[in-house]
Picture 1 (cartoon, rainbow, N blue to C red):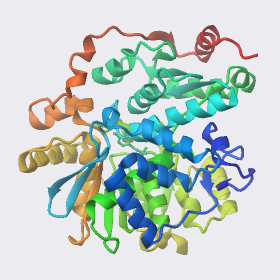
Picture 2 (picture 1 turned 60 degrees about the vertical axis):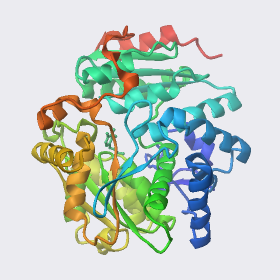
Picture 3 (picture 1 turned 90 degrees about the horizontal axis):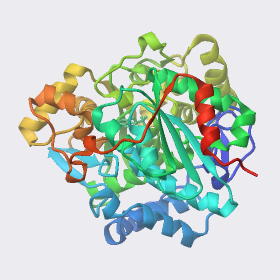
Picture 4 (picture 1 turned 180 degrees about the vertical axis):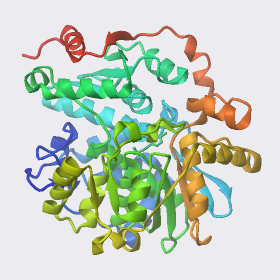
Length: 479
Ligand SMILES: *Cc1c(COP(=O)(O)O)cnc(C)c1O
């Protein structure tokens, strides 16, 4: 299997080559040349694999279709090491929970940092360690986080040979629980850098350091952001796991509603559907930052300025643009790389927007690709959290609440189960839960008292040179 760039100007590459890369050199995103098709017999085999051998086996079988430059026995071992009941809390890994007629929650947030990003990041940590050892190389991951991504990356990479993490975050702006999760890590290969500034300052620093090509090369700087294909591929697996739990036979369809920001999670659903998984609709749920809802309603994709990007109570969906969206638009346009370049490379740089409303392909987003969308606000979130608690005795987090709110609006045919992806546990966003319910959410036992643990964090001014200097002092220079 080879991977191509959505903009058409980069060489085709194999999986392990793009594993350690971010964007393609032409600025595009990598996608497989074609989506492997799952026929009825293959789907039955996957159903049996999940029910009889478990999630790790399902993951191995799906990943094998896309990865041919890791020996099968090694890939299988990496999957088995990643998806254990010990790390993810249950043998099912992603159990379904029934909410009400036709409505289910798929739990993706029982990993080490209590957000769905663990599902992919834990595998990425093991893949990185494996591939770096095979190459005899090192990688220093530099990132910026406002919460979930940074902690998922740190818990995936901690203690891994060949990898260091330098994670910047805006000082004092993450929730106390999120700060405690990250800063209490004592592993020598994890470096927390609190920047005196806001999240944008952290992102600017990462950009400035990455644009210094000489520094980047000498210190082997890499990233683990959501455009990484391996992360997206790992997420495809739980759409299959959700499907085989919600159905008994392959002639049944299901729909998914996905709380969305950068379009990484729901893009994995799109890939699963392209492979032939019987998905009826993929519903994109946004918060007040409704870039994606606007597109699916109107055909206009408009990147927001920072004044137009709202800080909300579902903060992991606070985006100004959706960095994985280009992958879907490439498919929507019949894989026309020149047009993808014209839209994402040229029009967005020039006008900050493009408009597909008059393009015949736009209607296919709904008709052929099954997409629908909806939006949720702070008031909706509070009402939905309360309603679920009162009617079902279930406390959901703020992001999942955005999903449930939109799913209820879009549910349609009750014969088609609607599965809402649960993307975080409520304890991460306790303040809003208290606002909704008048009481804090339950805290998993292993997180009891983490706010009191000793913290390991370096405070620094919003200055790329200071961060570079810190990296120089903590990375033995490569030969
Ligand atoms: C990252 C995140 C999202 C958004 O996922 P995308 O892949 O960026 O669309 C939603 N909810 C939570 C809790 C997250 O951490």
